[in-house]
Image (cartoon, rainbow, N blue to C red):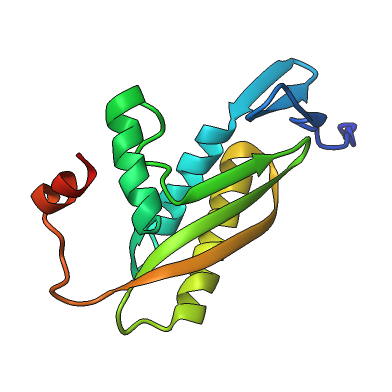
Length: 156
């Protein structure tokens, strides 16, 4: 007869602490992991884009500013446009600006985006997502595509 050890499951993360502006730090018994807010923003953006019915992230002005910012200073570009993140000690709050496709049920799409974003950020970062605020800024109509040349001409 063998003796069974009953151990409590080992926690992988003891605490999450802020480390300066724009990042959170996971502290474990084996070391620290710093997660920048831009990482959380990219995860949230990818999770939102995965939902059927989402045409794009960002509103007209933020999309134009994102293109200019990326070209001028190499800052966060289209990958995080339309996403704002505030990461605290153990939690994150996320704001999303969305453009949805015509014909979708906006409340259902918003709920699906919220579920996807929360699941992705909590699983990948270990932060509890306290809220995902969604602003539907525009509606994409069929045949309303703006060519990249037209978009570039507007921001030069």
